[in-house]
Image (cartoon, rainbow, N blue to C red):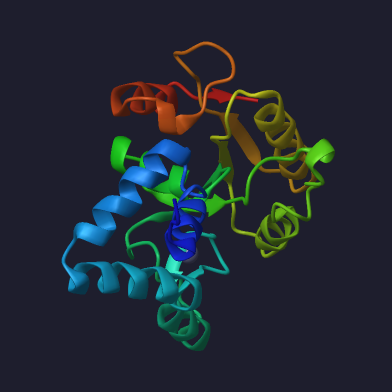
Length: 206
Ligand SMILES: [Zn+2]
């Protein structure tokens, strides 16, 4: 039976989405083809603009619109957090997504720094690849009194936390690690907000 090459390509492209295998990608593709054309085109436009219009904050690493990054560079103000936050504290996470999880689950009032993943030499990710040099230059500017490590309890997360701890020691900064009420290999996005809030408040000084 002759089938559409474009449809097969669409299915293949959809499998890059997390948790989407071939079968789910097929269902999504069929649904998209049956959907209102305007909605599908809107989705396509949003995907296109996500690569050009969404950037990361050069200070903390969370997602920001490109125009806000430009504005921030001009004003030299950190736009991601409100004015009455305690900027002497930085919570270090392994992704921008984890910043939002902590922000929504706890009453933490400090600043953030999102790394791009964890240190994993086998996957070619060393300290520089995940943004440690940016964290270091932020610490070099001074005025930071506490670092709170919120990386996962996986081996890579622990290696990353250890590296940040060494940096903190070098700059004579107090460092704590959030407690996890869960088994080893825990990642934040699998936890409910009560567990995260508890883990955050019960953080241990290292
Ligand atoms: Zn920021």
